[in-house]
Image 1 (cartoon, one colour):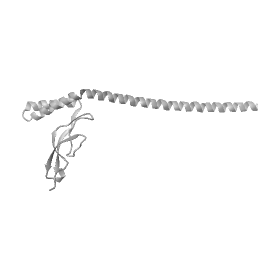
Image 2 (cartoon, rainbow, N blue to C red):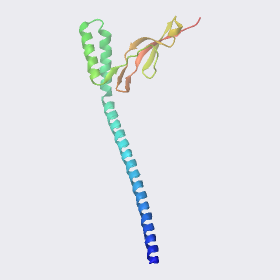
Image 3 (cartoon, rainbow, N blue to C red):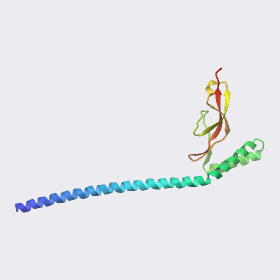
Amino acid sequence: MKKNINTQSLDLAQIHQNQEIILDLYEKRCKHEKIKEDTLERLYEELDALKHNKEFQKIKPFYLDLISLYDRMAALKKEDDALSTICDELLEVLQKQNIQIIKMQDDILDLSLQKVIDIEIVDDAKAHSKVVKVLRDGFRYKDKLLRPQEVTIGAHIKL
């Protein structure tokens, strides 16, 4: 009987050890599945981003043509009220396509959104390296820069 109890104790110990091995394998499998799910989710997100970027790259030349048309009309709208209305309507069309004019809140130069085209001598030292004039509007599509805002910055020269 004692031998039978020892055998049963060994059998129970073996069963317990097997349970731990199975539980460990199950936990590893669950972690592996979670990693696989996370990886697939990231891949789908990257694929979706690439798809949207490819679509944007296809239509970007058209948007730039519309922006050029807007530039020409904006230059002429001062002379003709009808052109002013058409120019405003064109701007609305661009906005409906998620294209926004870059509007700077202050005169601080932001090279990620602006391009310096000209430099103007200024008397005020505080205006040095500040935007003094916007020459041409900049545009962005969602978070992508289509065209930087073209600006003139001030340059203070000490005599």
